[in-house]
Amino acid sequence: MLDKNLANEILTEATSKGADFAEIFIENKDNCSISLVNGKVNSALSGLDFGIGLRVFYNGKTIYAYTNDLSRESLLKMAKEVAKATKGNNNINILDFDKKDYRKIGMHQAKILPNTINKSKIVDMLKEASDTSFKYDSLITETISSYIHSIQDICIINTKGVFAEDRRIRTRFTINAVASNETEKQTGSVSPGALMGFEFYDTINLNDLAKEASRSAVTMLKATPCPSGKMPVVIDNGFGGVIFHEACGHSLEAIKVARGDSAFCGKMGEKIASDKVTAIDDGTILNKWGSINIDDEGTETQKTVLIENGILKSYLVDNFYGEKLGMKSTGSCRRESYKYAPVPRMRNTFIANGNDKKEDIIKNTEKGIYAKYMGGGSVNPATGEFNFSVREAYLIENGKITTPVRGATLIGKGEEVLKDIDMVSDNLEHAEGMCGASSGSVPTCVGQPMIRVSKITVGGRS
Image (tube, rainbow, N blue to C red; front, side, top):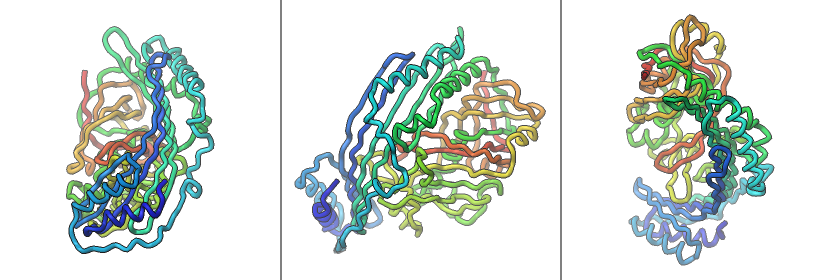
C-alpha cells in the first residue's frame, strides 16, 4: 500500500528532530449498509474511506496527524509538521523492514467477499426477516432490519522495522422488533456478526433470529413492573457479559491504569474477584467479531488472561502505555480508522466457563431476578460504578423462573460485583457489539456463561 523507500523517507523525516519512535498507519476501507423499515428500503449507503495516519513518541507523549492525500509532497510535509513538535538529538537508524502480509498468513480468511453480492439479494433477505417478525404476533407494529459489511485493508510501518499488511472483513445483521399496545412500546433486538465474508449467513438462521426479536418484544410488553432492592441476580450468557466489559474491562485497559484512572491500579497479583471468576480477552478466536490477526501497531494478537481464579494477572497493553507500566504489548492496540491515534482496547472479552450448571443456579436461587438480555448503561471507569438496564427480565421465585418484569436496572460497582459472583455455569456464549472510546468505535465481543451475583441493587419502575 506504500513503497518502502517512501515509508523510510517519511519515518526519517518524522524523527529528524528527536522523536523516539514513528509509525505510519494506512487504511483503505470499503463500507456498505442497507436498512429496511417495515420491509421497505429506508437507506442504502456504500463508500470508500482512505487515509494515512502518522504517530510519533516523544518525551513520554504521543503526537498524531493524518491525511488522505497520498502524494509524496503531502506526506513529507505532514512528517515535517509532526517533527516540529519534538526537540532533541535522538537519531533513529531504520533497518530493513520485516515485511509480513497477514492477508495471506492470517487465520481469519473470508471465503465470499461481501461486495460481490448483489444488493437485491441482501434486500430480499432483510425483507424476509421483517415479514417473519411481523407474522410472529399481531402486537408487532414495526421492524427495522439492517445489514452492514466492511472490507478494511491496513498497512502498518514503523521505525522498529515492522511492515505489516492485513485485511479485515466483517459482516453483521440486525433486526429490531417493536411490540405496541394502547399505552406503550417494547423493543426486542438481535445483532449477530462475525469477522467473515458473506458465508457468515450460512451459519445463522435469519428467520429464527427475527422470531426471537419479536418474542422478546411481546414478552416485555406483557411484563409487570420490576421490584426494587438488593437481591441475587442471575445474568444469562452471551450479552450478559456487557457488565464485565463496561464495569471492569475498561478499567483493565493500560491507558486507564497508566493515568491512574482505574479502580485496579497497583493491584497486579492481588485478589480482585471471586475464586469462581476467570476473565479473558482473546483476539485469536476464529472469525469472532472482535478478533484480529494483528493490532493497529502491527503486533500479533493473542489470548490474554486478565483474571485467573479471582487474581489479577494482566492488563490490556499497547506499546506506548506498556513502556510506562513496564509491560509488553498484549496485541490490544486498536482504532476506528486512520483518523484516530490507537490505544489499548478490548477484543473478545469474556468470563470463562465455570463448573456450575445453569439449572442448579436457578434452582438454588430462592428469590431474585433473572436477567435474560442486558441493555445499555453508563460506567465511571475510575470508580467502577455502573448503571445498566435489563432488556428482558423475570422474577425467580422458589428456585423457578416465573413472571416477566420490565424496567429493571442493575446498579453497583465493578469491584463489588466481581467479588459477589458466587456461581458460574458452563454454557459460555459470545455476543457482538461496538465499543466507543478515545480511539473511536471498534468491533468487540462480550461474553460469559450464566452467572449469579449473590447481591446487587436492582432498580425498578412502574
